Length: 254
Length: 315
Image (cartoon, rainbow over all chains, first blue to last red; front, side, top):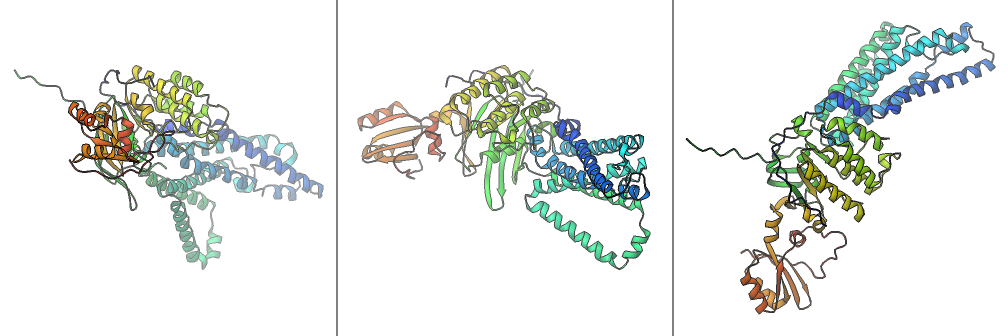
């Protein structure tokens, strides 16, 4: 061992570097460009392809594009609902569970990490909503992908209304990612007990709400308004973001 | 006219009565410590002595149960600029799923203003880190090498290495030592490194802090540590007589022979007395001193053939 540090000149007092910001955390969260931006589009492409296969089966069974029956069945296509939440939930979880330790290792503060992660979730939700809007436009312009396929012009996404589609995709994506991030933050803060307790608490609240409303189920169903779902999504997003912030504020790195 | 002396620079690290408990286990107890700026400090001690816990506190990755931690005069847990002034890659560092070397190298400069892309490229090349494999699939040595890349290239004012040699072969370890010396010569900063390879890293260190059972049992310069103890070896009876009344840190017996590490300065008189009794004396190496405090021997060092007796007699 010949190397030595003993002759190094003494240092002057360090001026601390500027702290990483939420924008820096967004860059960290989006470092995997393909996974972040291409996978949602590929997922939608797979849904479109599967919808095509299913439509082909119905065609073989005698249903024909453009008929009332075909349009009604196609516009009830729930493919997007089944495909996107899985990816978004996973992305919400990993954006905290494994990215938080690296962010702090790189010198990010907890506050910058939380703000940056929430900003990232918002940006990704906006990206998905914008992608959905563009796909809806293409779908309309091509006469449902030239063969009568319905991917975005479906009841779940607002039945062809661009504003509703953007609202559903944005709020839905953000709600799923935020909830995933909140569960991951509970894990970071309390270990395996964290998400278990959070899930139990959520289940108890939902069960209590169901019991309270059970007697008025028909009245509630009759009065149901679509904006209730949007309001519910906003509540989920707000609670999840608050939980994430509270949990990570004093979390240790695992 | 009065002559005023300039105020002394605050230490890079100041710990006062720091304790950290995990449920019923005390990982650190009443740790009080100052580290001046610009030193390379070896954090030594056996597994479970509290080294990683201490480093987590320095990096603001964790907070103490009691006492206070200051890095560059502020709490690294809550003060964002201080948090960003520390680079600490844990030995079990987590990385996001599917993260590759290119992802790490693309984001790290945003977090460390003094990041050296040249140093990073040099280290990546020297360690032959694969760029196409997911970091999660790296071997133990490759993960250590990536930690070294992040730590050295960050040029963070306080850089903390947690057993950075794990899984590295001798050649790779030499790369680390050379790069550390070169980079510190060009960009002096405070470094804390935990290690069991005391002999191998001794020449790099300015200070040593030895932890045992969560407490600091030695905090000194390397030279002071070396001068703080000596060894006496020879016939058991002679060594027994020579060490009577002295504080024996460690003792080994092999048949009729005994070797003892004694706290104190090795003077000519002590050496002469030992010669007259048919025994030998010598300065204790840093490794022997650490072993005496209960730290584990480095890899490849044969364990002492005899039992370690607890023969300490307060001076």
